[in-house]
Length: 247
Image (cartoon, rainbow, N blue to C red):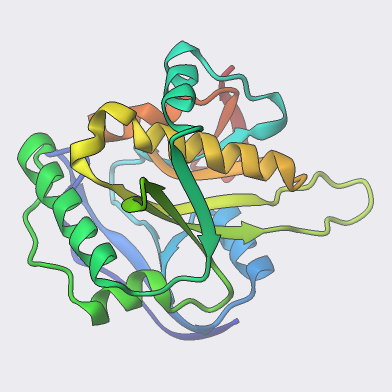
């Protein structure tokens, strides 16, 4: 790994818990292997493109990394409904990241909807350069998951493949890491966010990977509560230890 610079942002209003203030530590890397990033992931980091980040808040420890043990996962009733609603009608294509007008428009529609219905901050239309920095340019190969319905793009996800070769006797920690997912708000009834996580879990299991990493769970944040419904799962504590959370 080659690190170019690292800094901690000044505290500001928290994007997850309005009564809290957050501060993120950032590190911009010139090079990074999947194995190196897996270790960073296990240490509580996430990333967009070449920029790694993790919480560095002075008093709050609500952001905790969450992962699903895919070999023991069993969908609940609502997750089964989401699977039935999509698995025959929606086509998933996995390929290399790219920029298209359809993806940029879908990204903007999704964020406009989230701002209006969930209080997300407003932001200007996503331009091609910033989209590329977040989702197309990566230090190692990343998968782009495109969901289509009758040939129309309705969802896009980005996934890291993080396989590891642990020392003899050590537990494997690799898996698929869901970077980000956005979808067509007009298809809300399909529960595409749930369906995407189900596909990530299913694909990790098919590839023989033990975990699906779903980013941060933030207790008290409504937009993060869905992650805990995929069980059994584990949270990473502030001491760096992954512990069973919900089974």
